[in-house]
Amino acid sequence: MGKRRVGGSAARLAAVPAPRLVLASRSPQRRAILEQVGVAFDVVVPDVEELTAGDPERVVVENALRKARAVGAPLTLGCDTEVVGDGRVYGKPADADEAERFLRELSGRAHTVVSGLALVEDGRERTAVCATTVAFRDLDEPTLRWYLDSGEWRERAGGYAIQGRGAALVRAIDGDYLNVVGLPLATLLELKPSLPLSHP
Amino acid sequence: MGKRRVGGSAARLAAVPAPRLVLASRSPQRRAILEQVGVAFDVVVPDVEELTAGDPERVVVENALRKARAVGAPLTLGCDTEVVGDGRVYGKPADADEAERFLRELSGRAHTVVSGLALVEDGRERTAVCATTVAFRDLDEPTLRWYLDSGEWRERAGGYAIQGRGAALVRAIDGDYLNVVGLPLATLLELKPSLPLSHP
Image 1 (cartoon, rainbow over the protein chains, first blue to last red):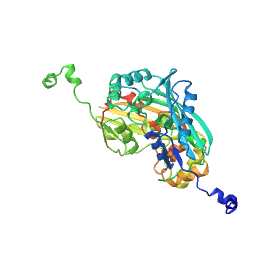
Image 2 (image 1 turned 60 degrees about the vertical axis):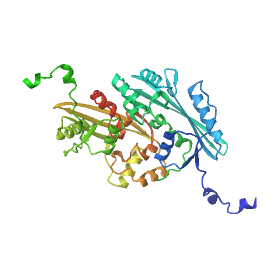
Image 3 (image 1 turned 180 degrees about the vertical axis):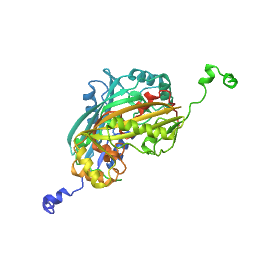
Image 4 (image 1 turned 90 degrees about the vertical axis):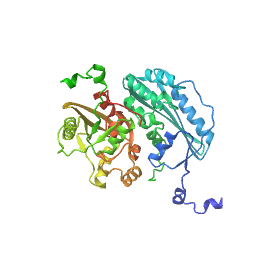
């Protein structure tokens, strides 16, 4: 108690360094987004059982919370993303055939990328959802072949990566672009406006 | 005439290699976008007088045409982009003070990025316009300071780069993301569907 009093002015308390952000994700895309704007962070990959069925908005928030809780650092960010088109969820294609089926179904139409964020700070949990609409071009056979041959569809929900060659598949988006890449940055900055941005 | 006949079947004519694309622009962002999807191209920087006043859609198409015509390769792409908010055009800020004024004006509101494309192929001219709406977050003072200190606003129309730290300024977009970066790829692929995408 005495220790607390020593140097316990409001000004000094405010100067205590904020805990460093821990990203509870193995995704290189999510790391790259935080690095792009100079957010300092560490990565701890959580080991959790994820929900795989149910309302997408509920699923992504629940999974983001599970990831953040499993890591349990003083300031932990969990994130989960689903690609939803016409009521069905597009996960990571198992093989080239499934990737082709996904891309044919997404061609010439709009789908939605839904992310859940969970920020757990000293036991206090805040969550948010971000949805971005992605309209695909009408994919002709050469474009489809080219993209499948690239192999870029591997390990990508929906079978494409908008920040890579997948850019050639997309006509337009409505919402946060970085949400489609993997982490809705603007939503994170709303959830935690004091998150320090730096110049690495 | 005899030469034309020799090997002049439709199949052989179709196999004649298409001319390589020449990009009439010094912009590293435009190059990076073509590279992202494996379009092979050369760069020739045109020396033209650009329109600076007038209706933005007319201005960007006219400037794109002037650039492409000035280069005059068998297949030339010209591009010009303007950032337009509330009826005024935001060019490249002259200094940090102007960059700050731009960002304060764009803060918490939506503006439009308008690009004109001109594809000149063996004298045949095709043009297109692409517009993307960009909604900025409400920028607080620390964010504004951080961005101005980054120096990233230099040489950027509107004073920001969405593909860099400027991502932290943007809430959402409506339209083609790559148009905001510098080249509306989907519009280019509509203009020239046969443009070969490769795997570099």
